[in-house]
Length: 303
Length: 303
Image 1 (cartoon, each protein chain N blue to C red):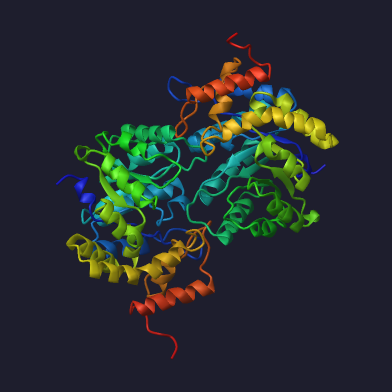
Image 2: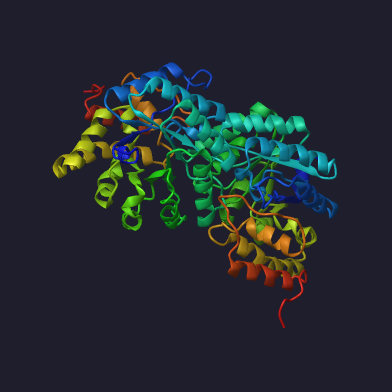
């Protein structure tokens, strides 16, 4: 089984717990979270993903998160380390992940405000060739041409795409444009809400932030999709939808804080988010509470 | 004259020249560029701005650009150093700029994909309070509320806003919402193309990438705006428009490379861009050439 084919599963993105007191990372709680995720059967974990608040970490903290993840996971799952920023910085982080024992890296989309499709292709290629290590590309800028992926596909170490432009015909077209012999695995980059649609279009894996709270439910969906059990797939999809919709609120501003709030409500230690994300407002806290009650994770507080 | 009131001028963003051979920074050519800008009368220079390809620099390179800018400028202009990324990283860069002798910093918009307005306010405030140094905020995300700026305005070290959401009524409203006694200067963050409109709405300064090629023309526009000379303002605006439109092409993908290409064509040493920006295509090269001919900076090649 190739590493690329092992991507046909859930990529679980752990949150990074920050202390309320001083904003520092609580590594003990990070270890608890990671253990819960891998003990319940998630096969790939992604430190320094967006749900890990990668862009709120210093480079030293990002490196420490990668190193500790490899140590904590200790072979129980594959580690796909998120890397990014300027090319020289991404290479530095990628080489660090490789030396620390990660199994592969995921390159975030460049944060540069002025990109061209040719430039984005060069960006990914320069990093992949410099670190010489299995790489997944996180593709989420609708302004960038899919041709970038077609052109990167022949690279030996380019093993997968976490696709996050929610345009299904566009996605299906690029999947069909890349010859199978290049061994590129397609992953739905927008979690359970979109996974069934991407599945039909050729993505046999999906990312998940839900794994921080209910890894079992994410795995149930994976199994239902694999078996082609449509009735169970849509039942799970309906159960998960309010959670993902709440995360998507405020142009995704709620993405991470909803997970952390839910974890705290059910007694898991998630801590707070860091700026530029702030606390959940009272209305949304109420919605998280109701959702957890519907999931039977919380007793009703009233009536 | 307060530092804030000194912002009522042109903020010139120098390009960072990269060598074609190895992609490294050519500091001699950077010095040439910077000297040309300040010798012709630009009063504020912004190392590590977007036109400097800040997001293509490693942190060490960003620091070196700030340090060298202070040394080269040597008091002939004010230095506003661009800083950004995660809060701890921005604080590190800000303290570096302060120690290196910059006059102020400009905080880029957070690159985090999940932001809330409250979180963005906390982001800027945390950085400004930690570095305790005069700060301009670069505001360009239309999804973030202007209320952030209203709430930051009372901070002692918050002296200006480089506003880059091209919605003039929205801009005029926020300018009028911030009491004058807070001493906040408003700068048009989208250069000569938008400067006349922002001027009417309360921005008595603007950013410029044109200064790399024609600092005199940018200064002419500033003077025309100051004198209220509408006929000259619009004449200059029409001359500059093709340049700014070409920079805006491909969702701003051309922003920097058009400047570098034009500089190279007239014998200035600008070098190449770094990924995720690539070379200019032949069609656009032709347009740059025609534009330079219209500006009488280049002899016609044909006819």
